[in-house]
Amino acid sequence: MDIDINGKDFVKIHYTGALGDGAVFDSSEGKEPLAFILDIGMLIPGLEKSVKEAKKGEEKSVTIPPAEAYGEVDEKAIQDVPKTQFPEDLDLEEGLQLQAQTQQGPIPVVVKEIKPETVVVDFNHPLAGKELKFDYEVVEKRPATEEDLNNLLGKK
Image (cartoon, rainbow, N blue to C red; front, side, top):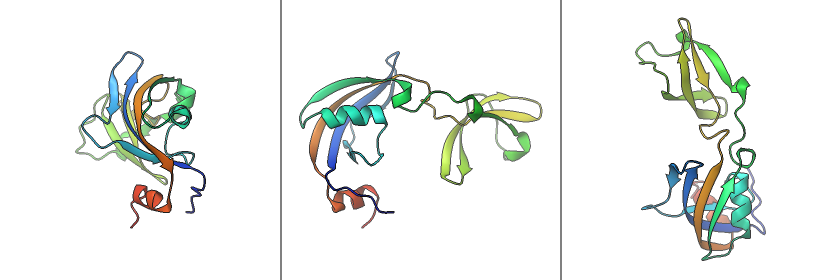
């Protein structure tokens, strides 16, 4: 997989991500800042667009509609799955979060409803359909290097 980083920026931000009601769903507080390279698909589009316009040292707030975050809820991604597809010793309950194995790797899913023969499972991203608010500070912004890319991809 060749990723062209020519002319792209390496960025580190401290951030807090919250839902419309103010409930925080993610934060870098007490952790290392989030590191990424712009324009290679590492961030949701709405946050990436805002960070591209920000300068090092700048603090910003951005509200991102679902279409520029994790998309709208796709009703086709809510499916009835036969109970036989689940381990017998699994204590199924509504709201339970699981990992489904797909050809693209594991994805998070949520149990929506338990029926006599099937389980209604939501394959949408947990933040699909939600407006998100990010408060962030750009702590580093500079041209990306191959070393940055290798470090982010876990390559030595």
